[in-house]
Length: 362
Ligand code: ADP
Ligand code: DP6
Ligand code: CO
Image 1 (cartoon, protein in one colour):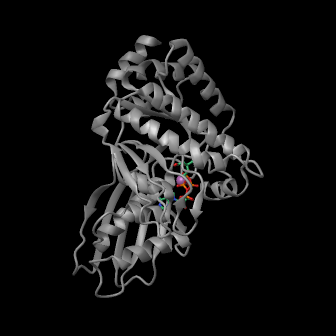
Image 2 (cartoon, protein in one colour):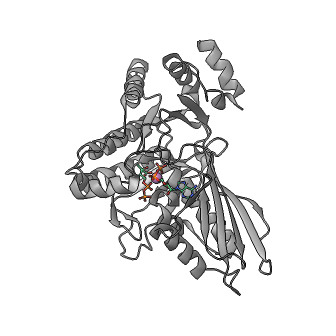
Image 3 (cartoon, rainbow, N blue to C red):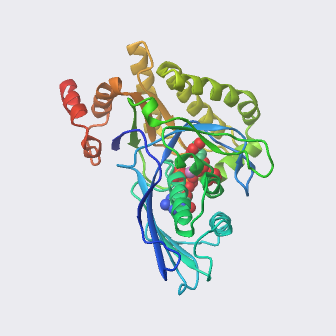
């Protein structure tokens, strides 16, 4: 069991660049954070443009612990585009990489004189394809790096959406919604910041890595199957999510953690119910995930209020949203139930105050 205590929040950053129009070898390095949805995106109405069946809302994490780092180099001497993910060569001919590359090049203001291919190297410092939103930080970082390299101006979150839907939300910090939009060309299906990080500075996220293995069913395949077969999808998209979007946005504006936490857990539960009612069923949660859910419900009940809220993406790993005042007690609860193991040190780093409080509780 790995346990990360993360701050909230961040956005894509430029690390280095030696990019100029005359350069034979231009390179850019960026980092990008993951975002964790409280209202889940699940299902597409357009697979190619990646247009969702419902709006969604997430918090962007700080990238001190979980991040993607991507370097892109452009050169006239390269013979093809190439991408290495965590040291392994990826197939850049996939529709998504091609859509991203083509769109970036069509909006380029640099490297236009000659044909420049790119070589891209990307590393996630957390489990890839395990339900911790690697596609979000991964494509946000890729698009930002390429936009810097090719001098693409203006908002590029809609290009990130072409790589992975959830990636458009990692382009902004704080709380971000992805408006589903209604237009066929996707021009109104955009990410919008609902509140900056400074609006709710004492919001925290704890990530419990239950299993770091690659999931059996990718988010892309899973949501396609759910959209085709789950009887729950219709009502979820027509009424449940639109109502929750309004309520959770208001809860964020009013710093109302009771409502925020309650809806976050309900939407996570409903999302996994949608997966279970998919034909054939998809099960992302495991016994440890359910143990964590139970623990949090029991803890909140005992406390008489929502002190922390779980949410699970398409994987067994838990993300817990909680206000600063709950952090020490909730961390000590997890440490009691999941005794300190490898990775626990990670959350101690830079959180001395919390460390002291945890010791008080033990
Ligand atoms: P997750 O729950 O981690 O988002 P997904 O099934 O949504 O899992 O997506 C995983 C896929 O996202 C990977 O198989 C890979 O194709 C892509 N991806 C992940 N990280 C990166 C990255 N750093 N750069 C480019 N693509 C990435
Ligand atoms: C459960 O964005 O990974 O994490 O658009 O097909 O790449 P694609 O899917 P992806 O789906 C994310 C699903 C989710 C919920 C969410 O992040 O909103
Ligand atoms: Co994903």
